[in-house]
Image 1: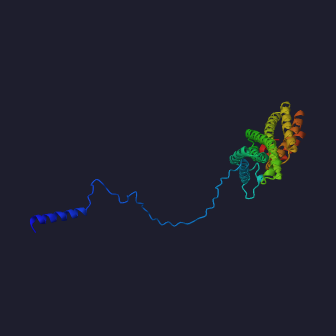
Image 2 (image 1 turned 60 degrees about the vertical axis):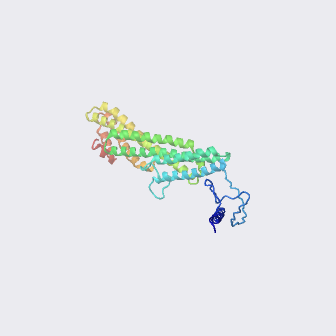
Image 3 (image 1 turned 30 degrees about the vertical axis):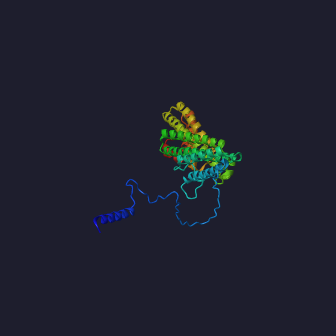
Length: 351
C-alpha cells in the first residue's frame, strides 16, 4: 500500500469515529427531566384510593339567649348567697352553727368577710338583671332582698358585738367604782346599740320574710327569728348602756348628799338625795319594762340590785335630812344599802 492510499484510509476511519460522537454545544445543558413537548411523559403513580362516604354534620355554634345567661347567673348568685350564710354562721365557732348561733357575744364576728361575699352576689345579680327576661326579674329582686337581709343583719351584728363589749366593760368598771369609765363605756354601748337599731330598720325596709321563697337555705321562720334576736339584743343593750350612765350620775349625787349630810348640812343634802333617788328610780323603771335578754341578763341583775338599794337609801336619807338628822331614817337607809352585796363592795360602809 503506497503512502497516499494509507492516508486516505486513515482519513475515512477518522471521519467514521467523529460521526459516532455528536458534537455538543458547550453552553447548552440538557435537563434530564426535560422531554420533548411532542412526546407525552407518563408518570406512573400508584395511588391507594379508598372510596369513603362522608356524612357532613354542620358544626353548629349554639348562641345562648340572654334569658339563658340570666338563668345561669341566678344559679351562681344563689350559690354565692349560700357562701354568705355559711360565712356568717361560721363565726359562732361550732360545727352545727346556724345564723341564730351568732349573737352579741360573738366577739370573733368579722363584718369585712360577710361584706366581701355579699359584694360578689351584688355583681352577679346586676349582670343577671341586665340579661333577664320579664319573668326572671321577680326572682332576682327576691335574691337581692335576701342579700340585703344578710348584709344589714351583719351591719347590725357588728354594732351589737361592740355594744356588748362596751357594756361588759362598764359592768367591770362599776365593780371597781371607776365612775368616769362607767359613764363613757355605758354611753358607747348605748350609741352602738342605737346604730344597730338603724341597720335593723334598713333590714326591714330592704327585705322581707317572703323573699326567702327563692332561697331554700334561709327559711321564713329563721328570717323572723334572726330579726327578733337582733331587735331584742339591740333594745336591751341600748337600755343597759343608758342605765350605766344613770347609775354613775345617781351615785355622784348620792356621794354629794352623804358628804353634806355628815357635815350636818342637812338642807344642802336634800336636793342631791332627791336627784339621786330620781336617777335610781328611773333605772328600776327601765329594767322593769325591758325584756330580759340572755347576753345582758347579768348586767341587768347588777343594775337592779344596786339601783334598788340606792333608790330606797336616798329616799330615807332625804327624809332624815328633812328631820335634821333622823336616826330612824338613817337606820332604814343603812338596811337598804346592806340588802345588796354589790353596794357594800362599791361604797364600803358609807351609810
